[in-house]
Image 1: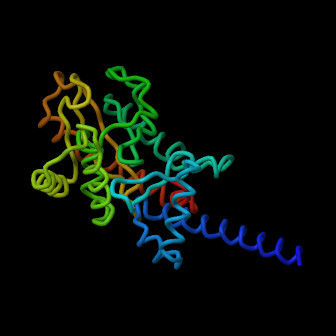
Image 2: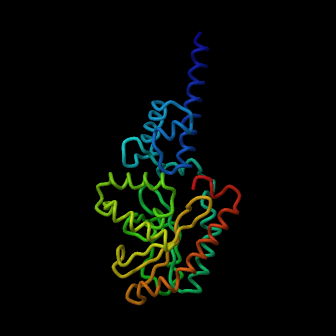
Image 3: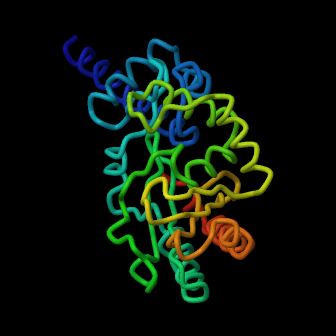
Length: 267
């Protein structure tokens, strides 16, 4: 009798683990997801999904994203892939192309990805540029709405992801996350029309930037060029570097998509 009880407990524990992993896999595909969306995709009851998310949140693997029923992956989830190089497309594909861009155009560029309500700087060419005024940028988080990178990402990500991100920002107490919905919608329409987003002394009072999305099967991130605002008028920089930056983003996206499974795994 005791043996049967023990076996049942072990099967239940294994089943819970399988369900938790299924929820993590679904979240990895959606970036930000509601309990209802995860329940539909995993075919698990909503109460079960909610309990699993609460458990994962206590363990540090997920965090709430704005409203009560939305969650996104937390940095702790990367420990699950220790020993697996999940960002090879950034180091092997993007970094050399970004380096070539800076060697040709002198100004530094930065690659950013969306993570937990902000844009995370993953790679830059600041150390390679003689005109850089920013160092130690990798790993820094920047607000979505005050950066060209965040605006470019919001403009080109899928509609459901954009709604979820804006819901998250709407629940944020941070002043930089506050927005007027009508004005922001108009701004994002302009970004989609031009293909790039701009910022003028909004993060660094000495710097301006232009950013374009890295668009493969999904929006992988953004790539931005940063320059000394007093040295180059915004409109001139837009005219001179928009096409080159678009070409850089396209080459990064093409190289990332050609890598077997890397761009779709825990990125």
